[in-house]
Amino acid sequence: MFRVIACAVSILAGCAYEPPKPTVVTKTIVQTVNTSCPSEDEIRDIAIAASRDTYSKAPGGRRTCPCRRDTYEKGGVKLECGDQSAEAKTKWVLCRREQVSAALVAELKGKIPACRGKT
Image 1: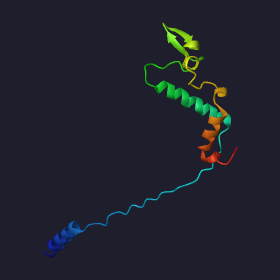
Image 2: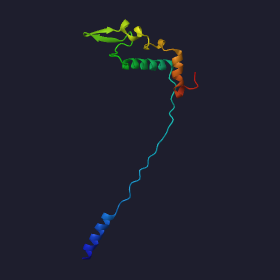
Image 3: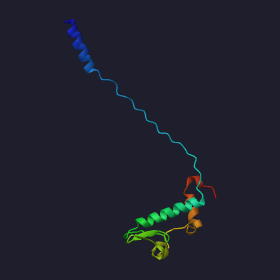
Image 4: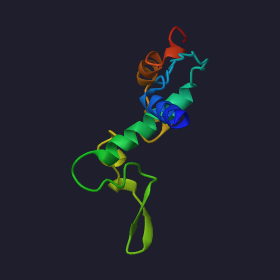
């Protein structure tokens, strides 16, 4: 009988026991990474990519010819955009490095933390 009571008490004690809740420790680590300032040609390439991307997303239908040297397909034949391109018609799409002004390069450089204070 004692064993039955002891068993019942230990079972009830086990059921009534609530284990402690686990403690979760989180830590945020902020690390400064040394980055170098991109070259002027790299900045020009970034500006060209951004300009072409902006053109392709502009409202007003299909945008497949931002630059003169780009190609499109018509009737299974690849054709160069040439005078049909936005570069030829409106000149607002940047397509070549020489089209990116020094002022724009300087402005973009000023927005990059690794370039601040460098000329």
